[in-house]
Amino acid sequence: MSTGEERAANGAVQTTASGAVEWHAPVLVRTDESTTIPLLLRQRVQRSARRALVEVKREIGGVWTPISAADFYEQVQDAAAGLIGLGLAFGDAVAIMSRTRYEWTLLDYACWFAGLVPVPIYETSSIEQIAHILADADAKVVVTETITMAELVRSAAQDRERDLLHVLSLDSGAIRTIVDAGAATTRSDVEARTRRLRASSTATIVYTSGTTGTPKGVVITQGGIATLAVNANAWMPEIAMGKDSRLLLFLPLAHILARFLEVFQLSGEGVLGHTSDTKNLVSDLSSFRPTYLLTVPRVLEKVYNTADAQQAGARNQVFRWAAHVAVGYSIASATAEGPSRSLSAQHAAADVLVYQKIRKLLGGNADYIISGGAPLSPRLAHFYAGAGVQVLEGYGLTETIGPASVNTPRLSKIGTVGQPLAPAAIKISEQGEVLVKGPTLFAGYHNDPAATAGAFTPDGWFRTGDLGQLDRDGYLRLTGRAKELIVTAGGKNVSPAALEDDLRGHPLISQIVVVGDQRPFIAALITLDAEMLPLWLSNHGLPAMSVREAATNIEVRASLERAVERANRHVSRAESIRKFTVLTTDLTEANGMLTPSLKVKRNAVLSYYADVIDGIYE
Image (cartoon, rainbow, N blue to C red; front, side):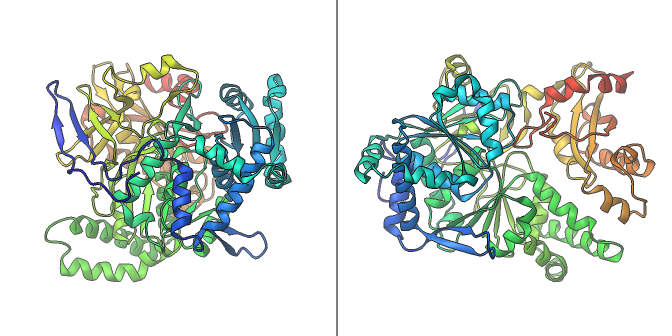
C-alpha cells in the first residue's frame, strides 16, 4: 500500500455507446496483495499504541473501560494462538452467533490473524438456517453468545457433529477456553499464519438475509474489506480519522455493514464501542457519547415519531413547528442564498426548544448518522440535518461489502445515496438497473459457481437487482427493485418502494407492502405499530384499544387514508394506492415476513396473504 494518498482525477459521468450511464470514483489509496485487515490493525498500533482503541462497558457500574490499541493487539494474538491450538487449519471456518458485543470484534480479528474465516450467524436464525450455514461453510468451530444458542447449534449440526471440533458459548467462558488452548502455540506460529494472508485470501463468508430463496454465502476477501476501509477513510476523513471519533455499534455484527464499520473505525483513529441490548440504547448513547452512528431508516423514523407522539397539546404544536423550521432551514442551507434572517432566528429558537432534546437522545455528541439498508424519506433527512445531525445516506449490498455509494459531510445531496465510494464504479444499464464494478466486490458465491456467473454481466459488472439513476454529478438515486417491479393489468410499471418508503414515516404504520401485479389498480397491505399506537390514541383523545380493534377504528383509518392521499400526490394516477387493508398481525422476523436486517420478504407476504389480496380486488 502506498504511504500517502494517491489521488486520481475526479470521477465524471460518462454515457456509453449503448446509452448506459456510468461514474468511476477516483482511487484515493492504492493497495496491493499485501493489503490485509491484520496489516491495518498493525499500522494503527504503530501510530498510537497507547491510545484507546475500544471501550467496553462493564457489567458492574456500567462504566466504559478503555482498551488501548496495544492491549487489544495482545488480546487478539492470545485468542489467535488459542484458535490454532484448538486444531484449526489455515482457511478453516469459525462460525459466530451472537448479539453485538466486544467479544465478536475480538474473535473477528483473532480469526484473521490466525488465517481463519469467521462466518456470522444471526442470533435470531432458525435451526434450518443454522444447519445450512454450518454445512455450506464447513464450519469447524462455533462460538455462540449463550448456552441456549449453543444447544440450538448442536441440534442444527446433528448430521455433521463429527465435523465440528468445538461448540463454545461466550457466557460460559469461550474466550478463556480459546486462550487457554493456545498455551503451546507461539507468537511465531501466529505470525506464520498471518504472513500467509494475501489480499485475495477469504476474510469472511456472509450469508445473505434471504428475501428470496436459500441464503447464499457471499465470499469476501481480505483485500476487499481493507481496500474499501482505507479508501473510505480517505474519502470521508471527518468520520473516523479524528482522534475524537467515537462509534457505538448496536446493529447486528452479523450484517455486513456493521462488520465493515468495525474495520473502518479501527483502521482510523477513533474508538469503537458495542451495545447488545437496545432497551439500554438511550442510556448507552448518553454515556458513550458517539460522534457518529450507524443505523437504519426505521430507527430514525421511530425516534422522530416517538418525539412527536410524546408531545401533547401546545407542546406538540411547538414540536411540529420546529420540525417544519428544521426542514426549511436544511433546504435553504443547500442554496446559494442560504437561510433568511427570519428563518435563522426561528431555527435558533427551535434549537433551544426542540433540537437539543433530539440530539440528547442520540447521545448529545453526534454530528453524523450513517443510514443504510433502505431509503430514508428526504423530509426526515432534512429534519435531522436542520436539527444539527447530518444524515449520510448510503447504498450497498452484502456483495459490495456494504457501501457502494455514500453521501459525505462535504459531498451530499439529500434524496440520493451519494456518489460511488472509491474505488468503485457504478453504471445504470439501459434497463435502469444499478451495476457495480471494482476491486471491493465480493469474490463469488460459496459453492455456487452458477449463481456467481449469473450475478455478473459479460463485461464484469455486478447486477445489483436495484433500479436507479445517476445525476450529472454522479449521485445515485434509487427508484426500486427490479424483481419487485409491479406491472398492472393495464401495463403500467410501478415501483412500490417510493410509496412504501413515504408511508413508513407515519407514526401508526409499522410495515406496508404495495401490491397490484397483474391487477386493475395498486393497493396496499398495512400493519400498525403496536408500540406507537397507545401514544397516538392518547394524543388524539381516543380510548386504549388493541391493534385488532384499531385496524377497524374509523379515526385510525381516517388518519391512514390521509397519509395515503399525501403519498399519492408524489406519483401518477396509475401508480397511486386506491385501496388498502390493515392487517391485525405485524410483519416480523419471527413469523418469517422480515429478514434479520428488517427487509420485507415480499414473496412470503404475497403468498401468506394471497386471500386477503384477492379480497381487495373482489
